[in-house]
Image (cartoon, rainbow, N blue to C red; front, side, top):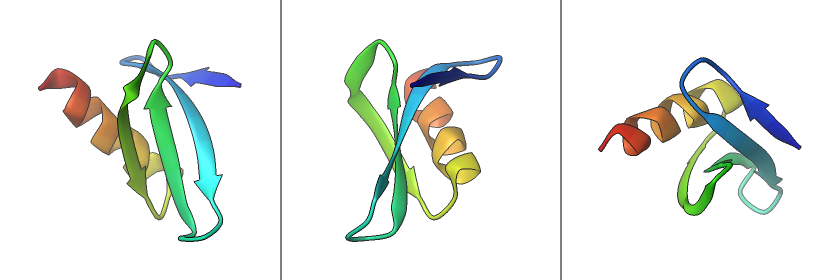
Length: 51
């Protein structure tokens, strides 16, 4: 499922081995971020997307 906020469209998965949420840009699976919360992972993804 694809989600979006005002800045990016993204997909979310949960890595059950590490208990981290992994988010991917909807249009580019090579841009990812992971964190303990979805919110933090999305913020990290937004930062990476701006670089």
